[in-house]
Image (cartoon, rainbow, N blue to C red; front, side, top):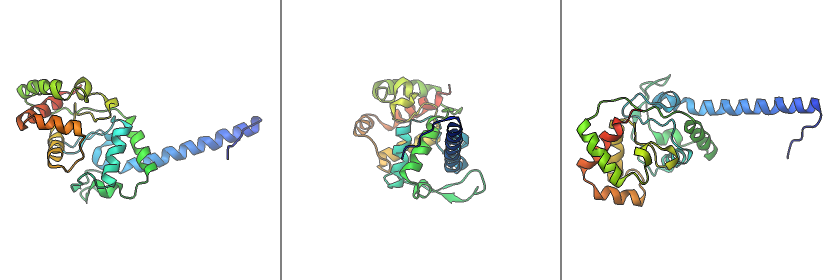
Length: 208
């Protein structure tokens, strides 16, 4: 039923009502993402090299990946919780998302999509990074545009991601533990492991 607001008193009441509703919604989102920060860091800006930076990814990319974990289409390796009251305990992404509704997933995806993607500052091999740029331009730029920096591609942003995590992600792609688009699989089949390592160093070199 649509709520109508007429008259100054009624208008004030509606503003209070909807203001409280908005505040409650924000509180719900904060509660949902609170646990995410225990591994992915504040606003998804991970400081742990084996945990991906997720703040700033697109809604579609985040939603698809959370649903893949929920449906167990992605492998869920166990890891230690890094911060918070559960620090040191073990968990995995399948456990994290198993009880989330589609609405929960949507709210989480919207929240992190609005955050800044804070690129990792890390050591990399300059020679490999130069080679990796050539590999990227030839094989990856079409879907990961502008060097893999554009969230709106809905393909993730490898640029500035942690190098150890990127290695793990490529291992998952090759082993079939992580869903991969047919067009990406075709591209990966065209390059060798040395090219992949060069790509990883290129993406890891992008810090701005």
